[in-house]
Amino acid sequence: MTDERATDGARDSERARDSERAPEPRRDAVREVMRIVVWGLVFYAAVQLAGAWLVKSKLGAAAVQAALAEWGAGRVGIAWSDADAPPAEWTAILRRAARGAALGFAAAVLVVTFALLTRAAKLAPNAPVVGQLLLGLLASGLGAVRDELLLRGLVLRALRGSVPPVVVTLVCGVAAAAAAFGAGHASPVELAIAATGGVVFAALWQRDRGAWLAVGAHTAWAWTTGSMLRGGVLDVRSVAGRWGGGDAGFEGSIATLVVLVPLAAVAIAWARRAPDPVA
Image (cartoon, rainbow, N blue to C red; front, side, top):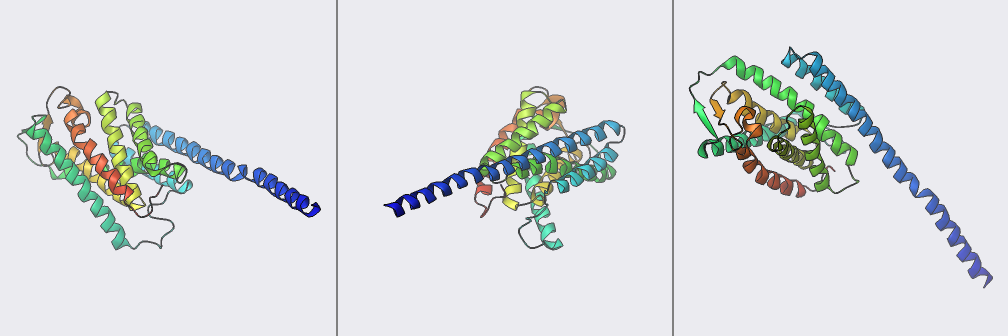
């Protein structure tokens, strides 16, 4: 009987010690999340200030913002490739970026084709401008780096392992909508499109376990719907009204949203088939 009481006492003591130790990992995890969030807000604010300071030079602003985003991402441990895998070769990186670019270009073509077929947009006479295409590609790439690192990379890094991957993907959509709202894109359709795009790019992050696929897709999407179709190759003009988007263009068109919502669902399903989601 004495031995049994001694054993029970030892077990109680062990459980008490475990209960004292248990909160520590949780507190550490919360502190790490808060550290990432705080640094993320600091770097996001710095990026916005740089954009306001260099408002007269859009390309210069994009370059400075991308550099700040890259530095901030490194500060909180956001990696362009899977940190747990062997270092990727440049050929593999180029393949990932090119595959992303193909996906972004295909999505843009779907949106434009649907808009033209449903009279949400119309073609206008145009003479292609090569210089606009090259500058547009550079600006699109820099903008994609900035947005992917700040709006997807930070969220994925902060919430990694703490909530299901699909929830993280949806949070990335909310972050994209919040950024669009802060930039002055306040119409419900514009916010919905920004959120849907954020979900798609976040799903690509998780599928790729890194940034290259999403950055490639984002660059191609922005370049195609921007410089290529606004005088660089074609002049596609959105019609007035909510269906076409009017002055807001594809970013404010319900026709764009109709195409992007099923694409977002497909992207989430594709990401969930990844062997080990990044989140």
